[in-house]
Length: 408
Image (tube, rainbow, N blue to C red; front, top):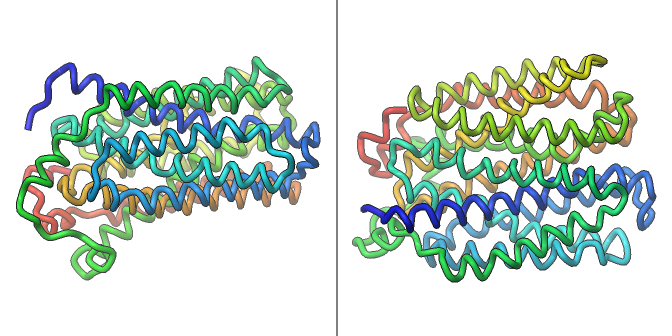
């Protein structure tokens, strides 16, 4: 099925903006934590910050798990618009929280919308580009996440202790995007075509963990778990890790900016390279390189140029490694089950996104965040590599994917 160029560009831009808002919103908390702790806002302690970061990501996991099957049943458009509206409203309300409990509750509710956004946007993008460009579809869409993170970092440096503006800005921006999406975002053509076809075999949890699919399913889930653990753990706690290493707070936040600039570069490069040489192969290289770079960052580096270069390269390899897994899922699963498959992969990955900030926060609370935080992340990247080594092709056979999808 073909799509008009104008419709395709509009869909791509709106999906990209959706993921940008998610990246902005989630990284806003990481950029805010040092200020919340230093000013003792609402009596925040390191344990409170860890709890809020964790409950926020629990909301994200619940949103991701619940939405995938609904998008396959009711369509992509309404679910995407609703999720943006949900997280925008509660992000806007976050600075008004009267205590730590309310702050966490608002972050949980915003997380429900955030968790729904990414798998739906990735599904729509996968259905908007040719199959041979599924890696690029995923990585291009995810550049929005890191552009949003870069914007958050820049704004955090500009507002200083006035962290409230990070959440007000994200909430207002989301509310402005909602009517634009209502006006210009079409329903996925692939979804409409799949709904018009005779009902085929659907894939459920039992099938995914059955003998024919178990190895590939566990590899996808394991890689997604490790990948999102790295993304959320680093974006939430990198400034505080650097503070623990003795770097000034302004430089620590600036390194978060550098990390996400590297992520944008890495996503563009990873998509192009993976489309040419295969997603599995490139994902393995990316996880392996990320593990080495994270281990090196455990060292105290006084040369600012070298430190910035290492953090930039870490962003290049670490953050795009996990997104390649989404590209693989989008490539081998057909439209009628694509939302479910991506939603489940994302939901399991979100468990990693909860684990990363929680473990790193515990290291911060214990006063051993540096160097143990980076050693922990290096080990996680190595486990992600192990998962990628298990990734195999047979997933295509039981879900009746055309043979062309087996090129990876």
